[in-house]
Figure 1 (spheres, one colour):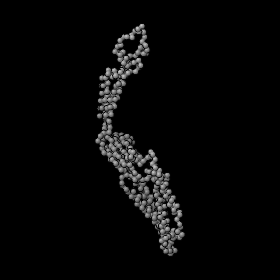
Figure 2: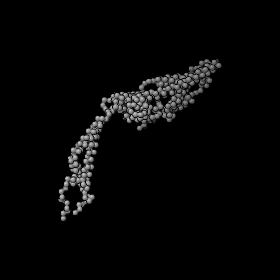
Figure 3: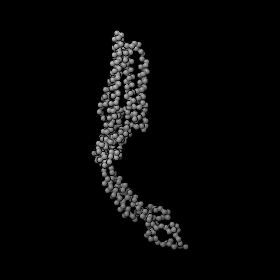
Figure 4: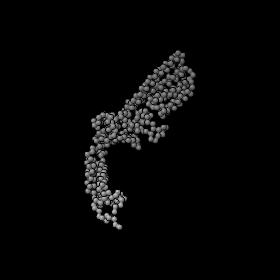
Length: 382
């Protein structure tokens, strides 16, 4: 028995629907190729138009240039103060802690600070250049255009983006100068604090030396004593040397406590040396005579005065030292080639978006034009 309509010819619309709707509900690769062939003109025009728009947009986008400056790995001397070492512990007893901050990380933290950013903003009038309302917005804009990176070798890379290649290089070099300025000010402040402390201690040592000399001279005149014998002088000089070293270590410990934690490695080392000297001093034999004790006090104060005088001169030199604290490997120069926009990537993205979007639109249109099967896709009614 023949069901009506089994061999009836299909019209053009039903043919299109047959291309889109298979019994399984999913078009095959052949169906897709047929759709692309029939809609090729639509696809070509759309893809070409969107690609052309992407090309025009890429040509209209402003050019940005990236200037780069590279700094050599910093050393302890570059910091100029031991205070930074306590802020960034890197190891113990010569053993480096994996992942612990380095001096390069410290320099990057200074470069990212608001203090340095404010100086850069004021120096280049970035509020006006970036067309923002205030310094805070200029700082956010600057933060998005500057990148700092510590390399595997410890070098520090500074990258600055700007529409003017010359300005980009100037800002990158300005960051280097501001880092050096910050380090010098920190070093000068620490040296000034140390100098003031040693100057006060030197005045005390000078008074103690004069008082010891007066006591010795007065005792000798009062008791009509002769000069001290060479053997006694040798014993007293040994004691004086140990006592002067002890006082010098005490001064150094006080200076370190102004900038370091009591738990820092250097403070612990000085404390151990001081404890060893105290044991040596406690084991010295007594002079036995008042005059020997007085003469030994004079030698002790002389040694202390000489050591403090030397430390004072060293602190004055550090305070007035004007050597650079940053070693520049590569200064930033105005770049010749732009870093963005990447026109080739923009055009390629436009082509892909145009092709995929146009293909999706064609498939959607074909699906809407396909007629629904009778009775929800079931068998035809006889």
